[in-house]
Length: 482
Ligand SMILES: *[C@@H]1O[C@H](CO)[C@@H](O)[C@H](O)[C@H]1NC(C)=O
Ligand SMILES: *[C@@H]1O[C@H](CO)[C@@H](O)[C@H](O)[C@H]1NC(C)=O
Ligand SMILES: *[C@@H]1O[C@H](CO)[C@@H](O)[C@H](O)[C@H]1NC(C)=O
Ligand SMILES: *[C@@H]1O[C@H](CO)[C@@H](O)[C@H](O)[C@H]1NC(C)=O
Ligand SMILES: *[C@@H]1O[C@H](CO)[C@@H](O)[C@H](O)[C@H]1NC(C)=O
Ligand SMILES: *[C@@H]1O[C@H](CO)[C@@H](O)[C@H](O)[C@H]1NC(C)=O
Ligand SMILES: *[C@@H]1O[C@H](CO)[C@@H](O)[C@H](O)[C@H]1NC(C)=O
Ligand SMILES: *[C@@H]1O[C@H](CO)[C@@H](O)[C@H](O)[C@H]1NC(C)=O
Ligand SMILES: *[C@@H]1O[C@H](CO)[C@@H](O)[C@H](O)[C@H]1NC(C)=O
Ligand SMILES: *[C@@H]1O[C@H](CO)[C@@H](O)[C@H](O)[C@H]1NC(C)=O
Ligand SMILES: *[C@@H]1O[C@H](CO)[C@@H](O)[C@H](O)[C@H]1NC(C)=O
Ligand SMILES: *[C@@H]1O[C@H](CO)[C@@H](O)[C@H](O)[C@H]1NC(C)=O
Image (cartoon, rainbow, N blue to C red):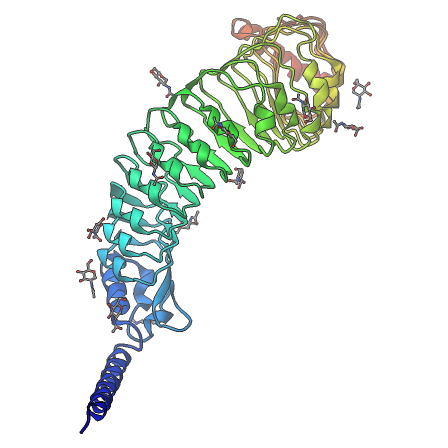
């Protein structure tokens, strides 16, 4: 035997050895329900900690790849998706979930799972989508989740999670969507999150986070939605936020932000669809450049300290349907300070125009009648508007609620109001209207009309009785309205 023969015979033996190993292992895996035994075992462990009707099909009458909510890969019988949202699951999530090593998609949203989120999830290096929202998970976000380096969506909202948002999440290189809203997270928005340059949707709404918005979010160049409403945040809105030119939705409502909005805001955020800044301490004028946000549908700047003459030109905002600027300090003392209403005539989808408690002092322009026939709610109460109420208001055929109380309107109540068929509530009290209640008001369908303040409540009851009497008699008496 020469050395060559020696090598080849040992190679042959190696070869045969491997063939035997291969056949044995195939036989083993076939005997284990023709799939990976670890996956089978993990699923059974997961089932053992959950009570639910939905999992009765998880039994040996079917291969585990055919169990409800389970999807296996095309070639290998390994679990790639586990989708058990809205199945009424109760119990907790077994740490064995971390052994489903081929898992890409895990959704357990909208169940009643409790206990901790197992840190073994961090072993799922292929995991792309993790939905655990709307459950009763408690404890902290396991730091090990930051090892799921392929994670694109992490949704943990509406649970009972506490503690801080782990800064390690900032090292998830592919994260696109992060939902953490409606938990009890504390300890601020970590600046490290700015490292996730792939971020498109970020929501931490309604958590007692405190602190301010870190400058580093300016690195989220792909961001489309930012929601940190009701997070106890303060300080100024970082200028870097306005640098995110793809932003569609911004919610910063119910915080304590101070400072003013940059004049170029509208030019920097041209894609805005929905902006909610309600309930902060913001000051200064509303930027005129908002006139250029042509996709804007929802504008809520109420409950702040915005001031100055409101001069936004709404003509290009053809999709706007909701405008709430109430509870601000806009009054400019100029008669034409409501002229912006002229520019609303092209906003044919406008349903809500809420401008109450704003210190407006001017006159209501007749162009109020050119507003959308979809307008349902017109709230101008608690300002200092004076002059007559234009009769063109009778063109607003969609109007359901008209609140004009607490101003200085004088003259007659326009009879055109009475013919508005959709009206449910008209509040005109605490003004200086005079003359008769127009007959038209008794002829149409019934609606609540309030013309007296509380001190005039007695007279109000009398008037109401008179109106009922008059309605049947089709006869109106002369009443002074306070
Ligand atoms: C199943 O998969 C796990 C993890 O990938 C592996 O360690 C184990 O050997 C596999 N078992 C079988 C029987 O193939
Ligand atoms: C096992 O699952 C099948 C459906 O896959 C179901 O019809 C059957 O009732 C289950 N068996 C038990 C014992 O729950
Ligand atoms: C949540 O699950 C329940 C059933 O458990 C279902 O009725 C409800 O429609 C689900 N809600 C959502 C938003 O999917
Ligand atoms: C699966 O996970 C559990 C708990 O994390 C662990 O004890 C076990 O060793 C893992 N491996 C297998 C093959 O089940
Ligand atoms: C969590 O991650 C650390 C390394 O960061 C690792 O040592 C540990 O085993 C992981 N825990 C689990 C349960 O996977
Ligand atoms: C992540 O962000 C922090 C602070 O924002 C920074 O100090 C750190 O260098 C960043 N890490 C990486 C890997 O970019
Ligand atoms: C923006 O908000 C609207 C209304 O809530 C929603 O329908 C839309 O999906 C949001 N867009 C993004 C990119 O989040
Ligand atoms: C704003 O700050 C004040 C004083 O610190 C606090 O009382 C209030 O609750 C805060 N408001 C919000 C919405 O966080
Ligand atoms: C805004 O973006 C520009 C260009 O990308 C950059 O030069 C500037 O530093 C950014 N400003 C802030 C405040 O992030
Ligand atoms: C709107 O955009 C145009 C074109 O970029 C610009 O000329 C104009 O000044 C902008 N209007 C406002 C109010 O910023
Ligand atoms: C407003 O609508 C009128 C009539 O439909 C149209 O002529 C005008 O160009 C529109 N203005 C803007 C700024 O879109
Ligand atoms: C706006 O309303 C006024 C007064 O009601 C009316 O004269 C004018 O024609 C209207 N303009 C448009 C464009 O509808």
